[in-house]
Image 1 (cartoon, rainbow, N blue to C red):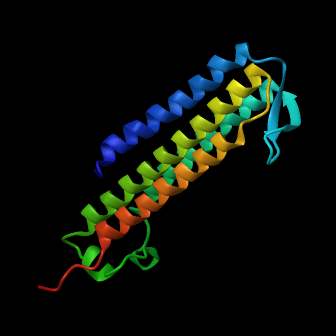
Image 2: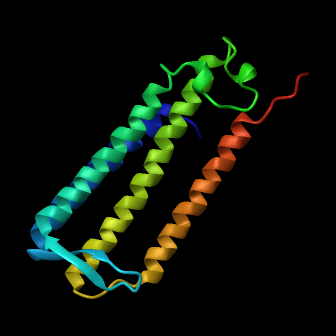
Length: 168
């Protein structure tokens, strides 16, 4: 579940997939595309396909670097800055490295979930631009809802993994 190595490879793979997604759609898009949609799914900002694809690739890289950085920075973070239930138990010398590995893996997995959500959003935007119609906002809201539910599931798993251990 918390395999840091697997999570890192998935993060790298999703980052590559996001770049490939942008490069795949670039030649297929019209020169002018909708960049933004209002709450009713109607385009309200237009621009070049170069901007849209560059924005996607930049966003994907930024998110990947942020979550990768958090996963690596946790090892250099002083214990006083790490907020865990029963911190003295989890950061005791005999458990410290396993705890930091788990936190690092969780960071990578959160990055993976965020990248998947962004890939879905960009795919939807590309599809809408190619079809030339307004967004069906129920799909956008459904995607946001699924992302939020998954994030709350991750918070629950985090709590479960680090809940206070019995003193026996």
